[in-house]
Amino acid sequence: MFNGYFDRASRCLMGLTGKKIRQHPIHTGATSLGICLPNETVLRQTADFMAAIGYQGILDIGWRFDARDGTYKLLDPNPRIGSTFRLFVGENGLDVARALYLDLTGQPVPVTTLRNGRRWMVEDQDLESALDYAAEGSLTLGDWLGSLPGLEEGAWFAWDDLRPVRVVMGGLVARAARRVATRLKPPARAEARAPSPA
Image (tube, rainbow, N blue to C red):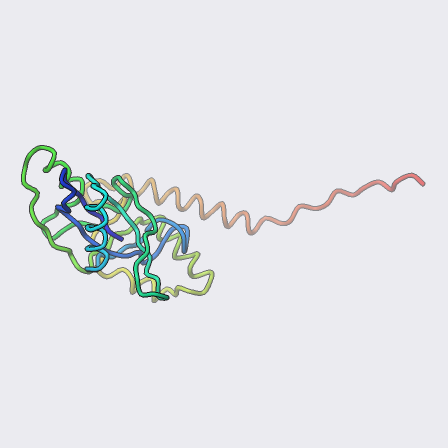
């Protein structure tokens, strides 16, 4: 993944890279747990591509590594703030929204560096995904716990305002209860039919 900001001259004033650890829904969905990792190939490839087409603004873009030829293939370009933009926060706290604001108001956009290993989570979605990955046999409790070190920020949790995470986790509990109730519900009986006339 790449998250960055390009100015009026299509110069990349901020660009950070990372990858999905888990997705919701599993295998095909949006990031539920992501990590910042350096990837110079993705950084250079994205900056060169955007410069070539004259792109300006915030970009959230996904690439997929193709082991057959050892190259990254464009997967999902989003010319907007992506749902995972807070994963990509530089050492000085810069993210794409701040970079955009500073540039459009004529202020310098400070250079920032990747916070290698920074992790960000969508709490309710990651718990659901973890259960789905566990159900298919590809994630254990130990694996899940081992994926949490480096977690610096959640989509909903904040010590100074716990209401959002309470509401979201309440919704998660309600969804889980519905899933359990559906699985425990006995199958509907077929209605007895009167014998047909001879």
